View (cartoon, rainbow, N blue to C red):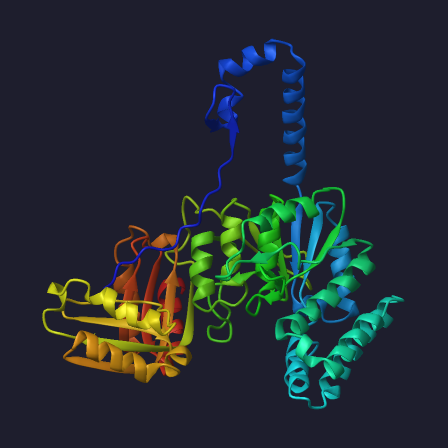
Amino acid sequence: MSIGASPIATTLAFSYICPRGGKVPLLHCTKTKWLARWVGLGTTIARKAVKLEAERSAAQRNNMSRIVCKFGGSSVADAGQFKKIKAIVESDKNRKVIVVSAPGKRNPKETKLTDLLYSTYDLASKGLDFSTPWNLIRQRYDEICKDLGLEDKLTEDLDSLEDKLKNHPESVSTDFLVSRGEFLCARLMAKYLGANFVDSYPLITFDDKYRIAPKTYEEIAKALGDENQLYVLPGFYGSNLRGEVKTFSRGGSDITGAILANGIDAAKYENWTDVSGMLMADPRIVENPLPIEYVSYREIRELAYSGASVLHDESIAPCRAKKIPINIRNTNRPEDAGTIIGPTPESAKLPITGVAGRKGFSMIYIEKSMMNKEVGFGRRVLAVLESEGLSYELCPSAIDSMSIVVDSKALDAVQDVVLEDITQQMRPDRIKIFPGIALIATVGHGMTNKIGVAAKLFTALAESKVNVRIIDQGSSQINIITGVDEADTEKAIKAIYAAFVK
């Protein structure tokens, strides 16, 4: 069993510069004798400083009452959904920052607007006729405008885009065109709500390693500084250091909302979707799974990464850094409380909070006698993967063997090179690829220091005839990952859920 450390979010701390030099925590400074003496001097500088501090504290209190609301594709699919959003926003005066995705499906047979934009780009970049997907895009926006009684039909924006695609397709990047789904939706939402439209493009900046640049949070604080104003922003994208539009991965509007919540020190981040919070298991696999009322940042990160699809796993860190609670809500049932995501609870009702699974992994198995005596063996193996741009998910090991779990699609592109390099450099006794692996994550703070959890889990899998290929538990003890054959994914999730809940 491999013991690994879970990622820990960075905690931001602020300090106040004392007259004597150095930095001390602000709350401490306000209590020290030097500040009392300093204020007691009655100087103009001191009075101004006290006034400034009072104004800053008041501003922070006002800011901390604001709520950031993100509405996903299903929540902005048509005019009827726009009206629901307006009612939700108007029902709480603290909902001041609204983030929207591109319009999603209105029915299962329909194509998402984002996918239509990808199709449009694919055709236009090849010099082919793109009128079929493009006309569907225009029709969607026209229908929303008409049904809401909005005069602005985005005609000028759409005409300009169409002209570029026809005459200068090389000037339009994939990210730019696809991001127009959110951009145009936010424009309409701002007009409908009577709010201020603010483009995410100049606010959210990616560095060369696709990380959020520090200046992002400063720009957000300035752009959204008036706590009395209502703002609407598009999700899913920002810009890189070269000034080009850059998108997040699919579902990235969740990340946009989290970054904005961090930037304004929001009181809460509400993520509005088409379900009333999270469930302990996928309802397509487990019949009527229990709802999750509260889940910690650490638990949701593990569950989201492992396949729970309600929230993008990268949206957790920005809120966790400032302990901003996240509330998963249902646009179609706003009366439902949903799921709250926050700091680690003191106690848990059940041993597990949830179980989720992901398919699409392969295991590289390496065996060599006396491996444990060969200094740097694991590092050199991982260096081979790094040289081919391949990241790994898990790396459980034994005395004379190690297994590396990687994404199957990523491995397929470089498999021959990786096997050859490891064989030449490490001279293993055996090396083999095992494809078709699914990773099942059983997550919960209730497992911590509780005897028998692992035994119950593996007994349940054995009784369901599920062969366990991989076992991995982090030292945090809130997550047990089991690797099984993809064909056993659903069976494994059902067995684990039944063992701990029913």
